[in-house]
Amino acid sequence: MKKLLTQIAFVYGLFVMVWCSSCANIIPPSGGPRDSLPPMLVLAQPKDSALNVKSNKIQLTFNEFVEVKDIQQNLVVLPNPKNQPVIDYKLHNVYIRLKDSLEPNTTYTLQFGNALRDVNESNIARNFSYVFATGNRLHNGRLTGSVQLAQTGKTDSTLIAVLHANLNDTAIQKIRPRYYAKLNGKGLYEFVHLMPGQYRLFVLPNDYSKKYDDSTKLFAFADSTINISDELPQQAPVLYAYQEAKKKDNPTTARTKSTEEKQLKYSLQLDNGQQDILKPELAMVFNRKVQWTDTLGIVLCDTLYRPLSNSRWTLDSTRTTFTVQHAWKAGGVYKLIVSKKAVTDTLKNTLAKTDTVSFTAKKESDYGSVQLNFKGLALDKHPVLCIIEGDKLKEAIPLSQTRFYRKLFKPGDYELSILYDANKNGVWDAGQFRSKRQPEKVTAIPQKLTVKANWDNEVDYELTN
Image: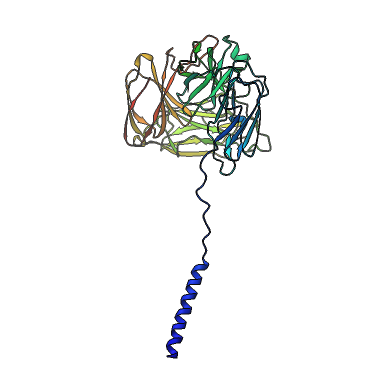
């Protein structure tokens, strides 16, 4: 009996120990779901959409602690003031002081973009805006539109559309616009709460001046004035932005003697060690200016070292690049003999030694054939197919039919666009505001062209003009 009681006591003790152990693992209460809601306006002084406002001080109160970030990049005040307002925030409140005197019978809009957010989770009150009027009604004129880059057919969200109440041509060059609106990623813009009247519509970079004071700026203009009323929203025609003049590259700083290589060297511009048979020339690039002292010192030969007579060498205007033009045979093997004294630099330095370089030309199987079929191509507008590799125009090909075919095409990924060449000169021409000439238009083709080697690459494109 005593043994049985001992066993019962042992089991009971073990049970108590297990129960206490489980009780010791205390799970702290969760903090609840994460706050994902942006701050909401609960009070405004003057109230939102208030009429007959006289004070230039505004207080906005939200349902949680808020902060304002990157105000210079986000805030848009319309009509466009001479002086930007002073913005401050504390706890639930945002304080605004307009530094300009309020205009009579005017509707003001403050657009905060992505500047306003809560303190704890940084939830953004996207595109929050506040409106008031100094007269007895809110103006509700509305204008929407879109902008494309004329030369590429793409969009640029760093641009703005601007409206001038002054209709003179010189207004865009000398004075601030009355209104401006930022472009979104699709190139669209929207003006709201515009005062009725006639306006000139332009497109500019969103810089400090917001003026067309430099012909290298991207710029676009509407051909006619825009009539805004409170009753009917307006849709502006598509505007095409262009650069009338290109920016000049800053000259590169000449290398100092301490960093310049003492040895005269060159490199052959081959594609993975092979010559592209679609290019008639092979480039030989030197590390500094040279003089051609021995016209027989650079020789292109076959595999038996026999000089190829149907090749021609030239030295470019920079005196740093030799090119040999030759009708390359697909899969052919070549040897380039470069004599040590073939060239010298300005200090009479020569190459370190005589070189013999062997290389091959690419085979036809290293290329793919391309056939492009265009539906909706306006042949009467003189279309030119623009082939872009990376960010450079590789080729511009006038089209006389809706089908383009080429037997040999270098593999890779390409962007395509169609230039409508109004003056039929084969290149894109910028606009000119002074003569009211719009730029030639380019339609971007969204679908990229991917060319595979040793493959028949046929693609159908449907165009919208």
